[in-house]
Image (tube, rainbow, N blue to C red):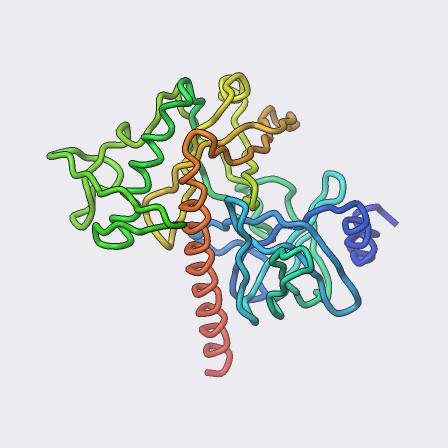
Length: 317
């Protein structure tokens, strides 16, 4: 029996192996049992550790960022995947409930799937059968790390203006900065309801930017697929500035300072890189990142639950 077929039919054994080596699964919030990506919608994929399993459930870490996990409501639909070697398998499930472990870590209890399907290991635009549609993410090598503080403050001001009508949100006991409205400036936030701040005003001191593919998000960092021609500059830089898309919560991406942890070359010449969030230059930004991502998870959760309700209504009609 071919190895791929064997692992598809014996997927419980594969998950048990991942659990024994303290490995991870990845998941996104998506309504319905269809494993194909939704047209016109990118999946924000969280990478979480597989913590336990038995015949009826999986226990995984909760999604989050900035060191904070966020629970999900019972019934939230989930599409999850795991890798064995160079192959990936995907399945549909749902959250049974959130749990708090003895370590005070927030975790999720997921229903055990009935089966799994093979899908693409990395983003492949020609594959539309099963898998994730992964979003693009802009990133730049940082040339002056001290400059990231001002960029993070400006980014926070713009996001809060979008979310709170120009008000300032106190996060973790730290008052938010007032939104700035440079006269006549265009760029990010150029809608009538928000401040008009040019793109360059939200950047630290950086080198040439590139468009990467966001592979996954975890509580501690991001996984990015970097084009081969941009990988050298990012690998040489001590820190990277990235804009994480946070739609549908907000149309302004979240600015993040990242520190490269590991890289490895892909067969197609691209480079996969794992990054950790870096808050040493602006510690207050950690609480804002955690709060913003918690809001994003809530928005995605509501959308997934609404999609499930819509599917049920259509089946009943």
